[in-house]
Length: 185
Image 1: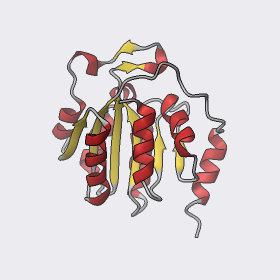
Image 2: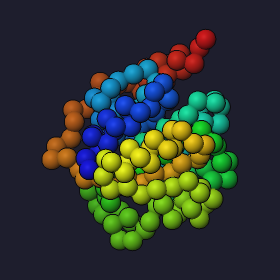
Image 3: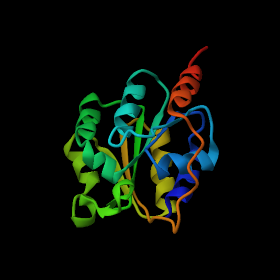
Image 4: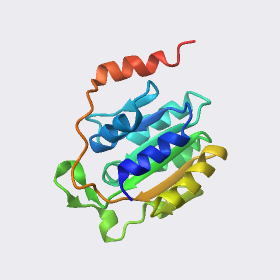
């Protein structure tokens, strides 16, 4: 399954929920799949996507979605442990697992050699988990995650596209300003 197709699927089921996109192609593809004020693009924040989403989830009743990457999560495994400890019922973490550090040269990540991020999440106390390999099972797991309390941790095995999307015309400071203003009533 391609990340862009999977991102379009997530976006089509997200409703008004905030979505935090991991750096690089994940944020670029989220932008091109459907830019909206409740998308938070994390350029330059490798390893922090799910931590940012956790902070949001702890400060709102809204369902919060993190679109993270296997390499980024491996750089900050403490995020998974903290999610397990805090146990936010409104957090959905989707991990795009391409089994590589795509942003640093395509080196094989630990998931390419046996590290199972779903089992890591389970060992950290996150009980609602799934690993999916195609759009149909992603839609089923993500649909449950949006309907049922979490936290949810979904590992989505993806393939890289032949070429990346164009870089989204997003400025980090404006992203923060725009996103904060979606919470002003």
